[in-house]
Amino acid sequence: MTDNRNAEVAYLPPAVPPTNHGHTVAAWVTMIGIMIGSAIAAVGVAVPLVASSGPAAALFWAGIVIVVLANVAGLVLRNMGFGQARPGEEPRREPAAH
Image (cartoon, rainbow, N blue to C red; front, side, top):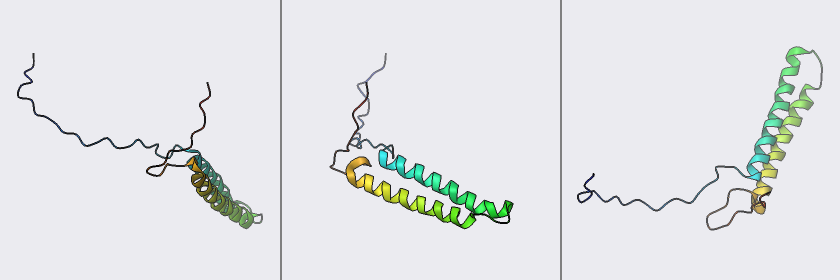
């Protein structure tokens, strides 16, 4: 048996509020848009290396536009309540499917 009479008392700090580390609709929409836009821009950069002519500049700028639109969409969704909750606010949640 252990002797707890001389045990040291540990005082723990209050628990931190739970976070979701970006697992929100706003974060997913933003990251998927950035990945798609980056892939399109990368194809636009690589096309001139393979072919002498093609829509390389148009592909590159289309990818950049998609990245910018994804960031704007993420900001709008966050401000609508679908992002990380600010301190003191309750996040908007989708109803659970059963």
